[in-house]
Length: 623
Image 1 (cartoon, rainbow, N blue to C red):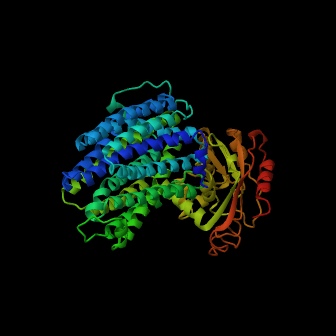
Image 2: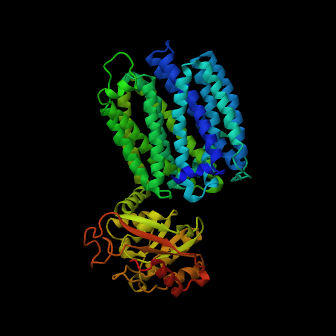
Image 3: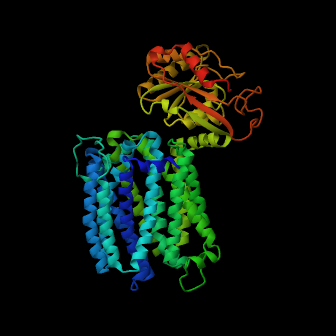
């Protein structure tokens, strides 16, 4: 069972998950009921009017995120979160009462107008939802928690559609009752959310929306990796809103399918998002692995392009059901592309959300999430305008999808060039998951926050990459300058902000600069990893530890965590056969290695003999 599923058994996560699930379900019950009503049941609405209303509806729901997120972020940082969530759920009940009246009147214009109020309520909930997770969950649970939230969101989209389509068969009054009932259940469930303290209780709320929008964007830009991750999330929602908004008319007018075909394809997309989210958790290994983001981006482009070239156009003038749809032409390819777009989206989005939560300053986290919501909203509004203008100009929906897929390739490449850490982490992930199978033991001994020195035996040229791929926190590696400058690997080491070091006889200035950088990193609360042997073993035995680690601890007495790598001796990157990388995969692909952590050593007890003996015992007899 995935660890994320186990979170549902905990009171710190289950009430929150059910609250956000019911809220997302209710939003989509209303929105999809409205969309299907316009596209399939409002006989007086033409295709052109349907396109216009559907895109206006999407824009009106998103617009409040742009307008009210700055205030929502301040409220979420200032107030205790469970109380704030309950008040937001009461507001949802009031809005759904108005929505129920609009359904009973069967007025498309009024139904679309109510979406603005629903968007305002959702905008208030957004910063609370994502800033709550780092408080309620352990660091190792953050990816799993985000996977569950994304899975729940898209399952809510699916279930909102299915229930909306089903209830429309009994008349709009049934949906009117349902949206109010679900809002009431959501409030009742929210009462079980445990108390979570405010991040900045002394914050003074400013209702000057333009000024606060600039302030929260400035907060987000303080960490460029976080900011560009926010941009990546916003681009995902540009893609997602385009697919979801255009899907009803794509099914009806391009594929010749009926409402059940629309439900089928949306189900495939939603299940794909859930599968991709859980797959991301599995592939991440309980760390925030942003190296998966380029894989997700590649999938979004490849399967978006393939969707354009594999449309299964129906020759019939009558709308066909799921069985006939699947039996015709290349529609199985359409289904496959939709599923893979969902999986790619899940792999892409989960690490980005987790990274923003993990690396945001705790006292400003909700406001940074609010900045994310502002940019998300901006991108989604632009997506709605893009869809509206493109379709009005005569661009077909498949061509619109193709243009978006090609744009995704350009945007992804741009972001990865600005933040090469994504590509660096991808290379590390590929190394750890294609050449080796890594068993991890007692890595919880590494503190979740605060400074520490990691010490490890040195077996191969990729030791640092293996450690970086297995340990949750970013690490500043101290490495011999000649290894630091190796072709290909140098990109990874430089992007990871590793610290090159040389011996005093080789380059005393570089050595002194390295110790200054180490001290600065530790005083900033970072993890620093050093290989105290000073060189890679030439015979498999551990070399005597050099005194440089003692100098580090004299300058900054921080805890020491001993690590040991097992099983790398004899691998492609070791010197077991003379020169490293002289024999191609002597142990084959996916050879098993192990990374073990020992108990923390207090700085006052960290003699060279103690540290070396501890690492030697951790390594054991397995080289």
